Length: 195
Image (cartoon, rainbow, N blue to C red; front, side, top):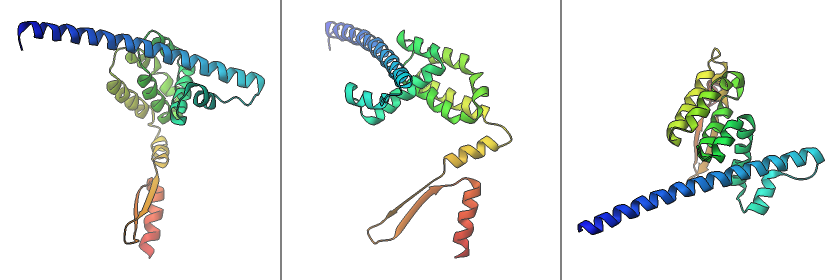
């Protein structure tokens, strides 16, 4: 590669990076507008007690999948709780992925809303300056840190994480996989052990 080619490649890369930044700003502005529309749809539904459901409207008129629509509605709930994040999104200071990380943390800390709310100012500032993966870790750790009420919230989190999956193999044998909170795990183990 000669010097001219290297310079052209460098210029093109710089141009592509600028365009990615422009796209990020546009996506953030569109996402913020979509959240505003969802909040307005929900307000209309409440005021008129009509059969309007934001998720259905997003699927029918915005071309979203049901999962994407649920994500947008969850983001709208976050922005309703933390309007500063909606403003940051509109300014492209943060992304929808940051809102998703905070939404997950808010669900995790649902049993300790007040304690978690005390951390929101710091989390809002961090959302504008941290990479998504780092912010997600911060949110997760913050949610866990407020759930230290003598193990009760930890137990509730364990109970919410309980699952049991099963499938049959080619020979017809049942394969089970699961995760159980200590209470349910002990009860299940006791039943299995009795057989």
